[in-house]
Amino acid sequence: MKHPDKWRDTVDPFSLPYKHFQLKEVLGYPHAGNDVFHVRGIYDGREVRAFVKAARQKGASINNEVAILSQIDSPIFPAVIDYNLEETPFSVTLELPGERLPTILGDNDHLDSMAYMPEYGAALAGIHQWSLQAGDVKDRKFFHRPSEELLSGLGLDHLREYFSQPEKQPVRCFCHGDFHYANILWEQHHISGILDFELAGYGNRDFDIAWALFRRPGQSFLKSEEERNAFLEGYRRFGEYDPDAVKRYMAQCYVYFLQFRTDEEYESFVRGWLQSV
Image 1 (cartoon, rainbow, N blue to C red):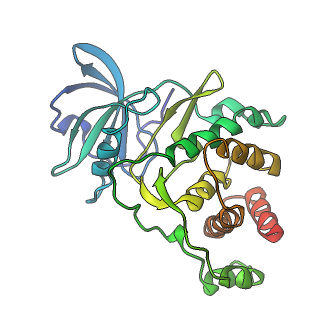
Image 2: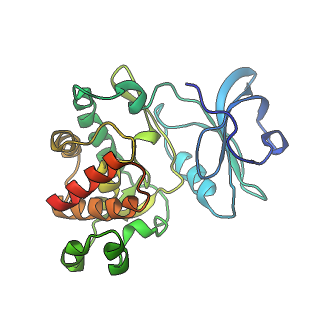
């Protein structure tokens, strides 16, 4: 998997105080909130490819991810081979095989995505069954109903009544926190890697599902009701969910993403979906 060239100023990965890993070469700079480097180096006497993730600002996100991954033993989750949680917190995880769905599906003209959706949903349901030592997920703006000012500014005044309805009591469980296509790898039609547990912890089950289900700009899948139903059918293999709550949280996410106004096709899709609500 090829990752982009340097696209912003970062910490120098060669300056980090590794204990078990010897950095040899930076192969690419994946887009992420923290500084992330696709690298080649030496671990346990052999050459490996890995990802170095260094915190851009103070916070416990990398600390949280290291703590979560240390409790998981499965080949589809990143193995932490080095880390330091002081000064500039960083972690080093082994590269996992596979590609992301946008690369595999391309334009998805024939809804080839349908073959992937059940396992996609089932994987999230499996994570929701975990009982790990972890704190609560960090609060994010997407968790909360959009303000009347935001709705008005986007020409969505007709949704005020929808968002003013009282919310149901959330069902709490262990949540991945950022379960979407960029953090899922596939190989031979099966999930080969689930990445990025920085935001993981105990939180709202139905929001975690909605965050996985709503379509991002440029995304060629999860455009149709058939795909969403296939995802949810997979989820139901291992867990229950509240359809109304999931739809409400999807609507919240779409309103916030509509602010970006990335392209006409996406804006038209979002407005059509919100109208159907």
